[in-house]
Image (tube, rainbow, N blue to C red):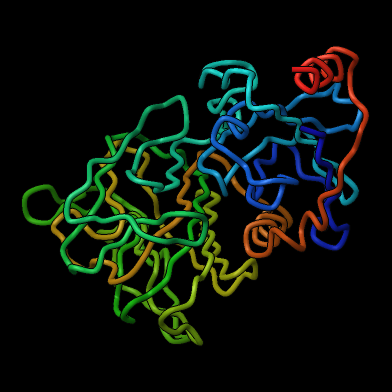
Length: 328
């Protein structure tokens, strides 16, 4: 199968992003219908000579992620696949773990809440189902009492998180929290007011929550996917909605190891009535340009990468393999 090539739209990358994991809709890459063998056999490159290979993760037949060492406004991606080569092991140089080496936990929610990082922070589901999401599948919590529990780990004083949410009902929601309720309450100075933006007004008083993400922000509605980013620098939390900063506040934060709950508090209160997709959290600060690039890539992948074209070049070994396949 020929190499397929696309170039990022310059306007979607405001500044160079280093170690940037991008999203690719594999359903648009293939010149013909893509099979799982094709997708798993793919090798991803930053040049049409197929020399500089990058780590990649095949999540599904429509969702893939690659890690660009230095993504610029003119970066190319070349994907070569033949349906024969074996998939990379997750620990391999170009395997899944190396896409997410800078992250603490990454959940795609294709059919479970397993972690794509080497940290192995797989979630334990309770009352959660999986259904059509922003990228393939998403986690659904429509019962009002479900949650995903991630194993205990520590966040540094500075951290970032990102996720997509679609509300089935607008209500006070804890997207990710360390508050366990009466049988496991958080203690110490945890993040307070980390989503203090309810209908345009700054809120206060939620000092028990690590992050009460997903409170109904001004202008939100049901049935629409929204992207949120949270960036904490040790003192101030900045909140981004669809790539644009909408609020900030000075909030405390404890770095004590804690169990983390997704889509609800630990006591099942303030559960999300809706859908969660593409969650990550990491111990570093995403820049405003990173957040803009990430939103542009994930919100409109077709515009971000533009039209995929066929390229006939490549190493002799690759071309020889294709010739052999054609002869057979």
